[in-house]
Structures are given as C-alpha cells and as structure tokens.
Image (tube, rainbow, N blue to C red):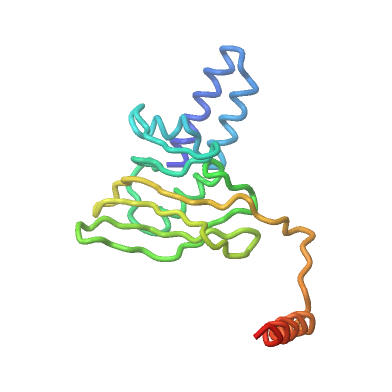
Amino acid sequence: MKRIMRALAALMALILAMSGVAALAEAVTADAAQGQLTLENLDRLNGGAAKVSTRDGRVTFVDGTCAEGPVADMAAATRVVDAMIPLMGGDDRTGFEPWRTLTDTSGNRYYVFQQMYAGVTVSGGAVKVITDADGAMLGLVCSVETQLPETENAQGITAAEAEALGIAHVETAQGQA
C-alpha cells in the first residue's frame, strides 16, 4: 500500500511539476510519503464521491473509507487514524491509543481510540473506525479536542501543596455548613 501511495504521489508530483506547480508537487509527495491523508485522497478513495463532514475546518465524520483496502484489525485501524490526524485537527503532540473493539449484531466492528496529547489522556477526545464484518471500511467518526493547554512549560503542584489546598477546601466547606 505504501508503494502504491508513493508511486501515485510521485506521478502526481511529476504531473504538477510539468504544469509549473513544483512547490505544490513537493508538498503532495511529502504528505503521501508520511502516510497522511488529504481531502483529495478521501475523495479518490471513495470514487470521487466522498461524504465528509467538518466543523471549524476539521473532519468530524467520513461516510465511506479512509483506507486503500480492508481494515481487518486494530493495527490497520491504527494506521487509518494516524493518517487522519492532520485532517481531524491534531498536531505532532496528538495521538490516539487503541481502547477497545466492539462488534454489533450485524458483525460491524467499531475500533475505538482514546485521544492522547503530550502523553496525557484527553477526556472527550475519541475516534471510531467502523467496518463491516469483512473489514470494508464504512466510516470514521471523531471528536478531537484541539483547545488544549500548553504542556511544554506547564507547572504542577507538589503533594504537600495539593494536600494543603484540599484541607483548606474542606475547612471552608465545613464553615459554610
């Protein structure tokens, strides 16, 4: 699959370069080499009729496939999610950890991922890759949290400070009772 993506990217780069859009060709080649999907890729994968919902410029739902072939296990679903991170509004600190696989009575599978940001679980951030019983991808739904605090210079508190705050809160609450 990577070879096909690279070959298609190289072909697109050649066509674009021949038409005088060399900078765009380099960007397309770089995205394909990194395995990142674009809206154009999604449209191609869905036969030119991709049904994609967005909010604030971020993909929130894909009715159809985001993969070249079947998504038969969590590893394949992980590759789909990783390729979709930029479209979902994630950055280089955004990741998704496999959480669980659910199967409904029709045999459809739901590969569920929990959002991580700089190594911390993000409450409310999740992605689901949905397939039929044979692994044909039916869709993707996501809620990616993008308004997250800066983690580079974040400072925590010590255990002693946390204890003091807890005691102060209890004392204040008891005084109000």
